Image (cartoon, rainbow, N blue to C red; front, top):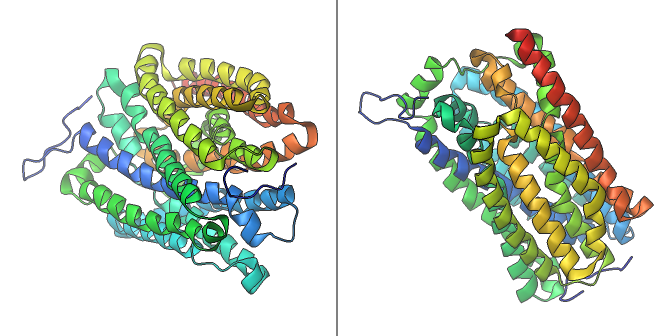
Length: 440
């Protein structure tokens, strides 16, 4: 293992009209969803990239590179553990004060936590307190992400034309590759332009500061929809109102559990093509970090195209049949693709592009896979809980598990986590079908 440096190289389509005559259409909701998700995923990937190329050096200098990165990935997982807590807290705020207040508080917490991360001194300056502060702020991010659920994807699903629901289901997912592209390009620019000492001292902080500005823009874009009378009427008309978590679990416990495992393979793959390969390349090769971040950005463009394509295919095939076939591809990728990372530049490019295409096809439909299992009036809170648990089980520990497995058994072993996710998805899709038959 090389001790790398940062330096180079080393059906109601028109919605409901309000008194003003303005209609909140699926396209209006789609714009708000894309902007909101892009801001959330930008914050997410800024932390993820820093977890590989900054935090091990700044906060775990007393550990060798592999162990330092594993500790960094353990902190990375804290947000996923905290996210259900955020859903519980902000659902209560939603019920009392409304979605506008809830969303404002959540996004301000998200932006503040992210900016504060860029202000945390290094371990060399304040010792273990630096790690404690980073953990607290990461938990703050997770709580905020749980509160940032605005119900727009659920509303989009029930307002979209019936024959285009697969297409509209993929809209929220576009925020992930868009956020990754912006974060990767920003880090690539800073790494290429700054000496290693300057980058590790102050350059890495800028993406965290940019995150706050992006969150403010996203907040106003979403409030423009969320606080309108038209939006409130659409939620009331479709009974998309927040219930307590206790009510949701009591009424739909099995559905929530099954729903959390349906996209497990997809969310595990999410980190197998974003965070894990960056850590492996950074630790075990002398490849230019800037170059790999650019490859990751290019591969994400293929992911965007695949997400769009998933909407067309799912409308023809059906969500669950589409995801079942996708899980087959993920299982094959888990077995064969890790070997490509050790095959030089071409192998890495193939690994990334192939992974993002498979990810885009599956990720594009993961949010709508089990929505129909919830009664309409319980879909809002049920969908939020499913999202939290799916990210926790599928993605939260994926970088940590994949890197640990690759250190233990080589690159082929890193695919075991992803393969187990594919198996869980097969079983969950089978159970989801039985649940649907049981309610029919």
